[in-house]
Image (cartoon, rainbow, N blue to C red; front, side, top):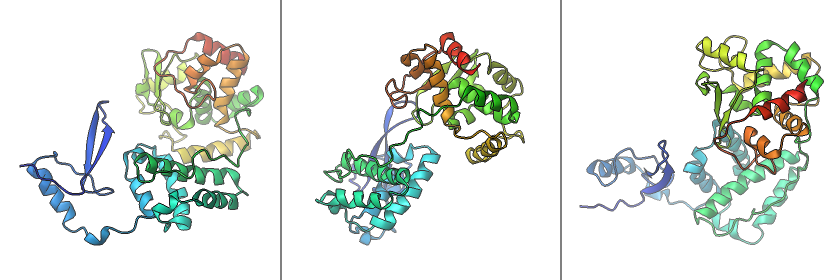
Length: 337
């Protein structure tokens, strides 16, 4: 006999196999259920999970409640750990200011101005102000998509911060100085980032398994794009050495241990100061490689492929499963000599 369990929350997800499936939760925002739906065990698990739940839990829906709903959903859970940490920090600020705001008020006239005025109060740090509003806007977009609200008051909101680092690149003299004078374990990170056009997290996380049959296979954490690269001669020795030493990761710190993001940032910052290289960051290496390649005749479509960027912004639309040829390598090499 089929039993109707009131409140069970069903969420469609993409499984590790690539197929679509469903996760079941005892209630929206509640614990995930482990047993098979429709079975006696499923009913027993539901009873066990809900027996101590207070019926008074039907509290007024506020922005604080909406944050809990959003962070328990599949969209939030698939974010990288570093992105979650950033979101949690900014959502904490949002909750201090608007946590008790009723959900119906989000759709009322004046909500957009309320949030924009709050952002303007942080105008002394425009980039931070934009990031806080972006997190709130994404959460409201999620709520609209699930029909929790009908109108997102922060759709198509402009930004205060207009500066961009896309035109800031390392000069060849700066690249050469770091590659030849920096500590080897740091120079290797920069070398690999420059010759693969990948982000810091993807470079530091590269495993020796990613280097196989003379190719480097990368799945970008931020975009999910799968990138297949023919490595340049400049990084092949580094890749082969890591493979021969049976390392787990290709890049290691000075202690022979796996890099942490914060540990690398600290070491990199100190080395930049020691070498007196200023005005550029590690993140600018990606734009540097792209700029050098483009300046030496490589078309933007090919650059988008190797970097995983879009054609227009080199950032959003990802080309999947490609093989970078020698033309990419030759273009970067000309720019770094």
